Image (cartoon, rainbow over the protein chains, first blue to last red):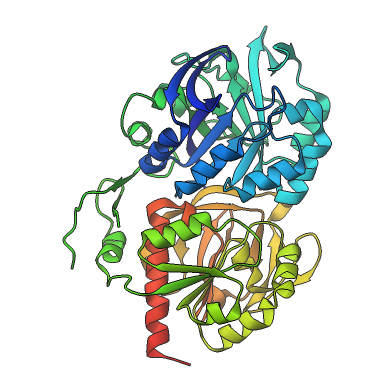
Length: 261
Length: 231
């Protein structure tokens, strides 16, 4: 049967991988391709690279970064998000080596482009990225460029419900970077129960992930900051999540373990 | 090449792959008809020790040991591109000559007789059957386990391994051409085979060590069979 997934996230700002805290504070980590290469080596189920500074200033997708990632020859499926403004942008992102893409600003700006992307690339390639938070037991949706909270938009929810996108990346932006911070109500109370969700933001503890993975509408948990500063972080999480419907951890080594025969 | 270990202990299937005969001088040809990104497939094959040639030129493709038909996008435009490059008749002829052909993802679906994606479109018809949508227009994304339902030494070592799928259409056809299935929730064809033609609905090049092991088993097995039974 289809497994649930553990996704490794690399956040990129001004060309550098960063640790992000609550969508407002950033610490540099290094070259994105080094982090992506680690996630590939550690056996992440998917890798999400989100370039968070590409929409402001209309920079468009970071094709140079995608080119550098393509040269790594990743063995792991790659999701890219950041700066996608048009169907042509999305097609080029896929042609540059991404398997899937996320859209965020387009959900606010132009749903016809999102539908166009789905028609051209297939809904399985499109993920709606939604930074959410709970306020007075209600889900609010952040328009990150204006730093303003809105209610969930009816047109967007209708489009998602109709299957124009395959999954929704639910980011708990308020608790992003905060250990054990993810508010599980964002998954439990998400109004479209039949839409597969990816939970991200403040997911650090295996117990937290186990509780979320038991939710029927959750397809994947995504981890960013908490993969840093230790080796084989993906395998260690997977070992701690034993018993959950995830793919078993895998190991790859450059050292000779078998005699050539 | 890197050594690989699945789970906590060495998988017998992967150990067999690692210990099999050297990739030697086998050349794999990626059929370049303008659909999709070949970088990952090329990298996986080179990592396994194969020489790779990417071409739409028939003379160049004649010179390789195994043909790989990749594909990303929609069935009708992919078939149009194959027709445009004069590759439909060529691939059908290579199949008749029992040359090894491996289709990946959309490339697997192109091997079928026809597809209902967007509009009814005739395929390469190398493996009888049709490509139809999943029920309720759903999709199948992520890692799923392969179940071999036919005895096939090229595929058997991958039984029970998880591979990465990303598609919303599936093959439907005679059971004798369905080598392996996956479940979502009902069983559907994950690997189809007719003679020297094999189709993989998933992405072996994005399936990490399990994908590389399968690629190597298939290429080694198909080339060995072709040497034993030359056309």
